[in-house]
Image (cartoon, rainbow, N blue to C red):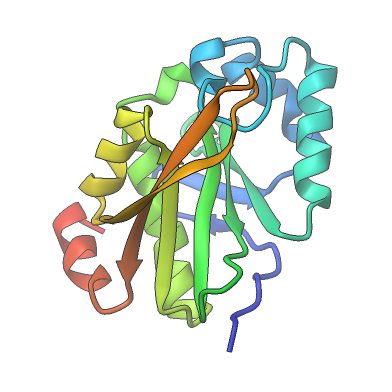
Length: 192
């Protein structure tokens, strides 16, 4: 049985609130990371240079029935600083992917990413009944790979020439997984 993608919900903890991505988030999102090539380097789209370009990327993501995107809102400021999404994983029974994630530089190396992953992984296992969470990234994105390993992701392999990057070069994609029975130990270690 293949699990279904969830309906959009609000998830929150002391650090972040994940809310269904909406066009009303775009001004904050553009202020957080619009036009910043380092923020968008590993994503499957070109860096948005205007709010309208970012709004179109958001519209496309929200309309894509293979994704359930969330705006990442920092509780302290109330401002959206990035987004993340659940994604369908064809061919994997009762699995869900967390991806399409980006954050503005102001929250790099803060508790934001770990807080988001705690919410999303807990929800995937405890509320949605998935048995596996998949995370993947560009083979060149070592910062993301380190972050995935830190939360408990186990390297499962690398898919060579998986897809083209926006600049036309080939991307090899590194796959990581977290199984339901592995998560409680990782969660406890992360302080969740």
